[in-house]
Length: 103
Image (cartoon, rainbow, N blue to C red; front, top):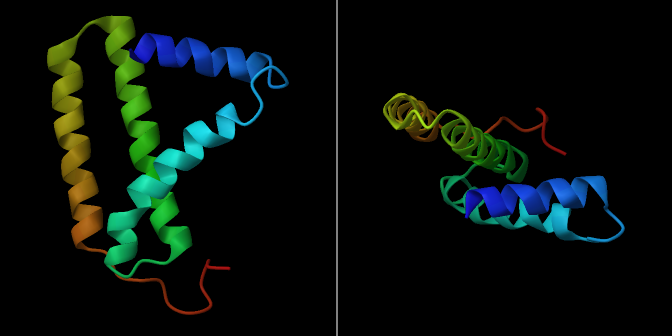
């Protein structure tokens, strides 16, 4: 399934006029969904979307690595470490102070 998704993504990158809206939707839908928990904890929209971006990029990267290497044990261990770091970020969340990086 990931390989099909990746092929579609690459086609849309190479031929954006043939796939209008696909790239934006394939990112935006995930960002909206994955931002919700951080927003519920009081994060700003900018902060929550940055966290969601890390999550999306991590999953895509790990899946790409797994497809290329087939080294499930190494990738699974890396995912465990990454999830622990995401958990730490999430639990240590403190909303940004007014006037910092938010628009």
